[in-house]
Image 1 (spheres, rainbow, N blue to C red):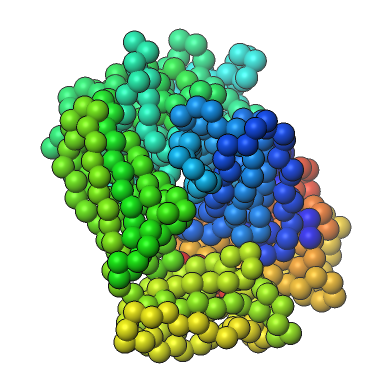
Image 2: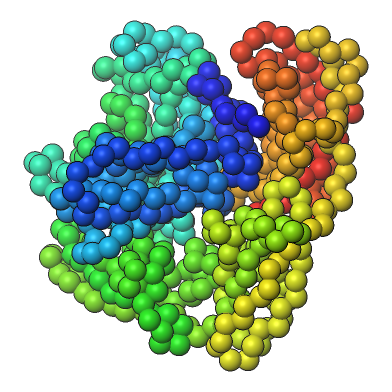
Length: 584
């Protein structure tokens, strides 16, 4: 199944297409791993995982460090076996079409393999303005970007006068996922006097501009833009009257000081001469914290645990140890969140502010908790990668993807009855009820076999135009099996559905997570006979069924679509769709 997205498809809709195609590729093996380039004497290795903001693994993402490059697997994992780490800090880059590129700083481990997680944010066109007239790209929380009239140029410096498509995202420090989304990861920065500092953020903006053809645009010299960044409620008491502006330099892998923002009420306002990621931050000297995350009931150190430390994150090494830098003079929390660690966690420790170059040691012991492990397989016993969601008293309390060997592990309270719902992306599923022990022992299940198919309604439509004459198209038949999945994107409140059969794909997006009629902020995209059509006019999606994870999303749709790389238009009538909901 060829589900690749070409460079010509760069638009708000194509970002959506890229997201869904990547999601399908996760379970159709359409990514390949490149061999890493030679790197000299081996001092360490690097392993990790690439996920989106909802925790869905992202396959086909490119991970680069120095001259080495690999691609994430079907389950989002990656591994670089040989890295020559001779310095204290390295920057690793992760990129994929349809997402904002993310970089994470890597500190050389004392021994063994370094570990990291990339959390990619979908890049969608949020606003379109006139380059000639300028305009404001405002977000719902009051943050915005004001572009001056005749203030946009192409990469070669030529004036640009057409529509400007903008991707604008506000990163809110009060958001629990903020540490996962910070460019660079560790908030290290360089001041205008070349001194190095640690940042404490009051908010960030990611801004990218492109032409109708997907060409990256920039601000014209002498035509600065104005950024307005909303200060979170809990930080307003400490937010200073003025604060430095910082931009993230991808080439150097670090934040750099450039300009000042002034506080106006609950917002910071400042001007910028170019776009990348911008930050309003207080510069602080470095301090350091280290510790160990011990397993439940006083167990050994836990490897690969995602630990939140103030506004940054780190991952424990093979012995459960972690080390991180924090800004001095700022209190911070250390926590291990269940939702990032397969149901285990739920511990936090408030830490006092450290002085300049101060050091702290803080170990955390995870609460005693039994676990359930198992393996997903086909009816014939072959391992099958998939997704497992755990319910207690009808409430979703944890979920995880299997590893590459199809194994899974989830933690649950002792003595509870849990329901495990397991499924792959081809609509095979299994539901198992497990009685957790009253003690803290683990429970190993026999193979969980994915044999049954959920009964899905038909996905079909009638298409006219571009050579079609009242053609009834059904997403089923001979060839590769139909993949039909949908999920709710917590980051923007949208539901995405994608139904694919052979090389044909239908993608739908609507703003919401309930039954109802959607006629605004909808997208319908169709890849048919290797031609891609996107919404161009009125579209309507009527959702008739919207169930919990593991259930179905069903409805009807109509719309007018136009070729992405041409001028032909098609109309869709009598559309019906059905998909398995695979994530919150």
